[in-house]
Amino acid sequence: MVFDGDVKSIGDSAFKNCNSLTGITIPKSVTSIGREAFYNSGLTSISIPDGVSSIGERAFFECLSMKEFSGKLASGE
Image (cartoon, rainbow, N blue to C red; front, top):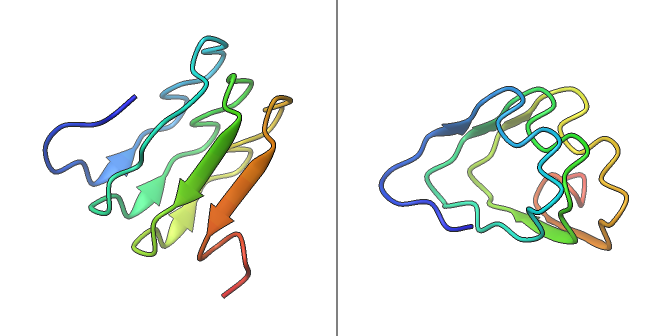
């Protein structure tokens, strides 16, 4: 999935239980990812842009297919 426009945030539960969602490109304009945004989705990898300053509780919980998680927040910077 690729977002068009100037998306600032991904809302709470936006892709919750979307098992068919295996990949997503989060634009650099995003600053926050909501609570349970990708809960139990089919994501296999994700890269968090440097501009993301907040990730809600359980945003990636139960993403059992996740193999790679990268970005500023993933490295603890």
